[in-house]
Length: 20
Image (tube, rainbow, N blue to C red; front, top):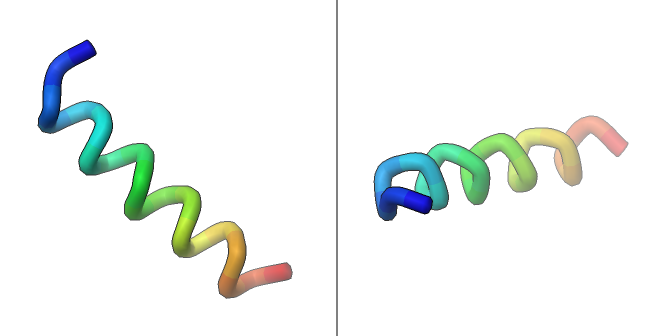
């Protein structure tokens, strides 16, 4: 996987945690 994709996934995970 490309670093850019991993970075985006980390941001998405953080957003999901904020919602919960």
